[in-house]
Image (cartoon, rainbow, N blue to C red; front, side):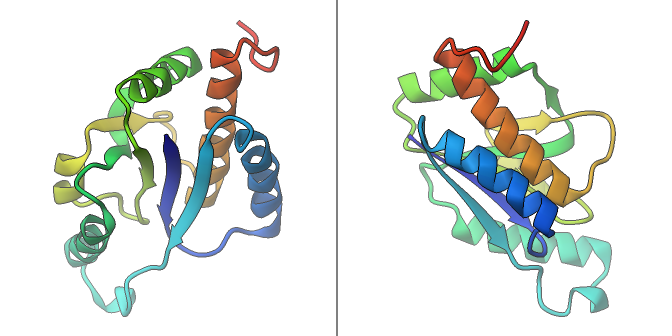
Length: 157
């Protein structure tokens, strides 16, 4: 199984990039993982929020393959524990899912068409985080989930 973390927005600041690199390297031990930064829509500042979300949504939907399992990170999504995330990853592996994509939307969230396409909507917290930080948090949580699955001592209960 391959896991991708897609995120709309600019390049990571150095402290975020370094943190992601640490967990990405660790994660590669367990699964094929890749972080894909999707550039913002051209002339985004001239678009209304609904137009921007629709344009971002079209771009994302055009990039997805029909067999991709899409997990949309959304403030109204389901909250899970790390153990539940680990169980989810195991279920996807058991179902022979080829690719799971965790998607972080743009500054105003995800278009309804993308949310409708997602098989799972996941919320990290009721708090609002900077998108760059969410990239780091998700990379670390994926690593943590795999250490749970492999009964390693990284995660404490």
